[in-house]
Length: 92
Image (cartoon, rainbow, N blue to C red; front, side, top):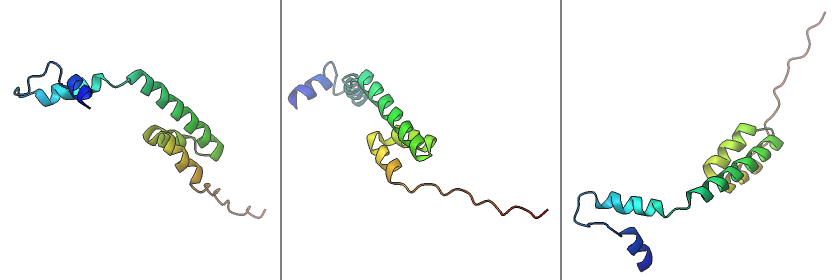
């Protein structure tokens, strides 16, 4: 924990008015953004595949985008959409 705090507060004057934002941006710089992007892309691709399989492509993409792999569970356990009932054909 001390190492993380040292990295987050490196070069920050704690008495300065913008110290919070400086620490916040230091923490954001430690995040592996490239890996997170590719993992999220994988989650969305699998969500699209599951959504297509269940007949809800856009819903699968949206849930996977927002919740990641937990969105897959949402797509899998939601009930199937019921087909619209067509009226009987008109007599001739």
